[in-house]
Image 1 (cartoon, one colour):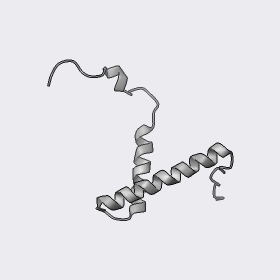
Image 2 (cartoon, rainbow, N blue to C red):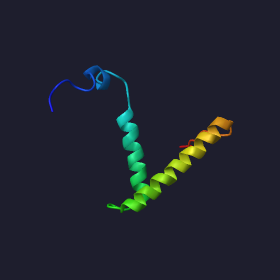
Image 3 (tube, rainbow, N blue to C red):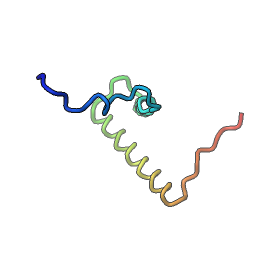
Length: 77
């Protein structure tokens, strides 16, 4: 312990930057938790749900790359 830090403060400090990383991660986490539907799921269920999410995102990327990806339709209010 002690000594010089591995990376400089400038490398990891995002103060005054307009990044929304935490919001995006929190949104994904909320979506994942709601898809699991349990307060304390077992690790196997969590892994299965993450794998399903990976497959879904993979398909979405393939559709987007092929030009067949439709943007989400907004509901009329």
